[in-house]
Length: 365
Image (cartoon, rainbow, N blue to C red; front, top):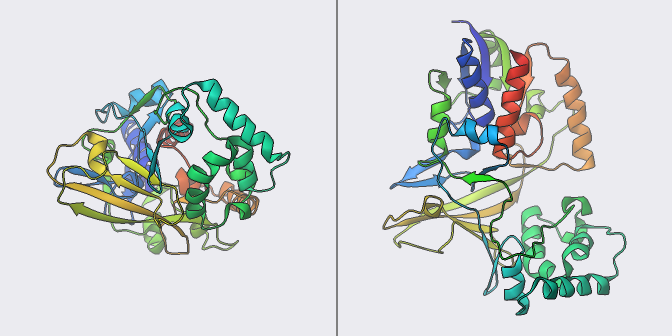
């Protein structure tokens, strides 16, 4: 059979593109190298708990059209992202807000918090931050940096903060209200029943082949369609001919516990460097679960190497320059469309992935 489109990757970008072209009467085949659909938003059902296998995903957007679009395929609950930070035996609310500052300094008013932060910044006398440490200190002062930024960031990046470039932290959200909602977006929630169900709806009526690595069967698969939508790693597509783009990776240790409630919150960040993991996710709290057991995942940041799962592009000057060279190659492709996080070598929130897929589809058709 000949298809109009071969779509490489059954994540959000590929699924939205497939859904839209199918609605317009086009035929498509989706191939996915993993043994499941939904990419990194894949959820596995463990005793009624939707386990986010590749890390916590909270849908949030201020784009009403995107919110209405995803609500065609899933009903969303009213989950609000309000993570907790644990520094040794101290607990703080995130994002940095008046609950954080009140707990840290025993104060009650925004002016008190602003005065403390401004005083600490002035004492440091940093005019031009030369690295991430100086950048964070110049934005938040010493106490917030030492307790809530330094250890967590060093675990995330595997380097000392003073050895990381300042641009990684362009700004820090300091909020002088008692509001623990991490996002400022108008719409927020989790699909009831998990993200896998949402992607299943997007892919209804579309042929999907799992455990199929496009690049290993490229000659055979390319012959099946006139156009290819590729959402994998752009440098791997070109067999790393110009060099290897760098990422940070993440690994998870997931276990089911014979307790009803382990930590009382979906996400707890561990901000001191002595704790090896960056956070613990307790999945049942995303859907306000009442199951008699619980499932937790400890999240470890790690260096990425070829063959590992790529998570976060390292968008520094060197890697962005290399990506631009790959992008110039991609522009010359007449039948290949590159898309998604890996195809575009940039981190996308879920709403932005969907918006980009809709935009590319509209342009294509």
